[in-house]
Amino acid sequence: MGGNSPCASCKLLRRRCAKDCIFAPYFPSDDPHKFAIVHKVFGASNVSKMLQELPIHQRADAVSSLVYEANARVRDPVYGCVGAISYLQNQVSQLQMQLAVAQAEILCIQMQNEPVVMPTPQMDDPDDARSSSSSFLHPNNLPQYLNFASSSNVIHDSLKRESIFGDIIS
Amino acid sequence: MNSERCAACKYLRRRCPSDCIFAPYFPSNNPQRFACVHKIYGASNVGKMLQQLPTHKRVQAANSLYYEAQCRIQDPVYGCVGIISLLLQQIHKAENQLAKTQAEIAVLSNSHTQDSQFQQNFLLQQGNVGQSSRPSTQPSSWFK
Image 1 (cartoon, chains in turn green, yellow):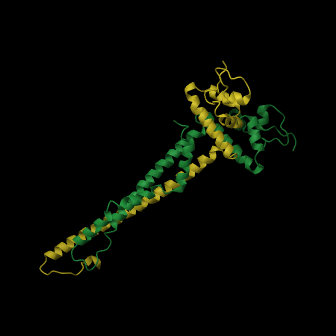
Image 2 (cartoon, rainbow over the protein chains, first blue to last red):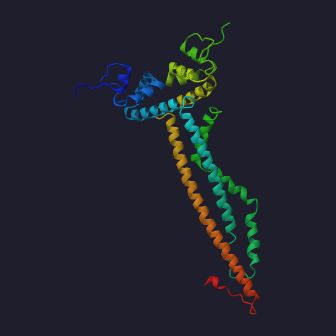
Image 3 (cartoon, chains in turn yellow, brown):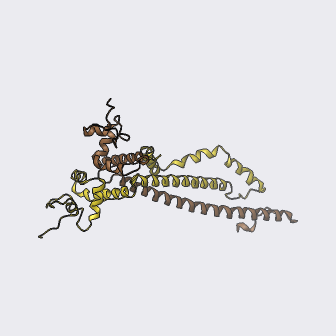
């Protein structure tokens, strides 16, 4: 292979593109915008240091995430990616609330259904069925069922992140 | 009277001017905050980014830069993109759970309605049977 064209980084930085250029595998010359945006936000020197500290098999993913973050920062110079995180955390909270309400509704339906199982053959007075059902609807039974609402560990983990992030957006 | 240098100027070992762009957002009592941001973005880039923003938006910008820098230091491969990815997964799971739960509600509501109608009809039937001249304790035809 002769006459290798410089990678996008070396073109932008106006330098010779060495054979072992750290940027070359990830910033091909046909996509100059990709390096330009990363350079604008992070700086070539910082990107180079970050890549050098990573094993080779992780560098492609690192570059992709840096490009993503740089694009987010250019689109939203105040919040960058943090804006998206805030939005998604709100969505998770809303879904958790909806799920809790739905699960409580199921319990209510189940509790209403329970006494209406099967009329027994010995039952002569239909009113007996109704009077025995009222004990299932005792208010003391409700709170212990509703406590499970915050059961999902997956959603709780995201709320823990909210405590790191909570004071940023105010 | 020299006021204390901000964390940025201390780190960069320079004089802290009265209009230092970093001073309001990188106080001297939190040197780690500037060190973190400088490691990922570089002082020059941070300064440029802050200068391009109106003054009242710079606090949020500095805070979000600090947060992203921390994420990148903790996770050098994915940074805060890893958190976004995790949140998207959580949303997807929660949506599936919610859809499943709502389907369960629909099924339970339907069966409850059918049971109620069943009960109502059964009780009406019993009432009709009671009015007949021959009292009967036989189950109605519902149970056949």
